[in-house]
Image: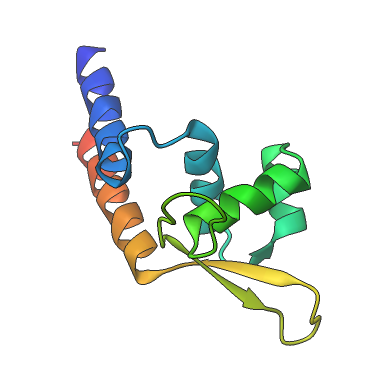
Amino acid sequence: MANRIEYFLRLLGHLQKIDPEFPLQYAICLCEIAINEGLSLTCLSERTGMPISTVSRIVGALSEKRQCGHAYGLVRVTLSPTEKRRKQLYLSAHGKSLIGNIEETIALMGT
């Protein structure tokens, strides 16, 4: 059991490298985007159970559009080519790198 907790701490360490106080809600949204690239804000809200206003603010912080404070640059927001009002969410290169590090740590758990 101690090994699993150590791996969990390593996972948290990846997030702390971005921000020592990286919120859990941000991590949840980031992982949902990684699993389902191209999903909309509405879909992300439904998948996380968070209000759309909260998800919108979190996506702003995870992308380059944070209203207050430092934006993390982990997510790229694009407009849907078929629905101009729909925003699609993708990992940025920085976000893919972070998720890759997390996946490597998870893979180590299986060995």
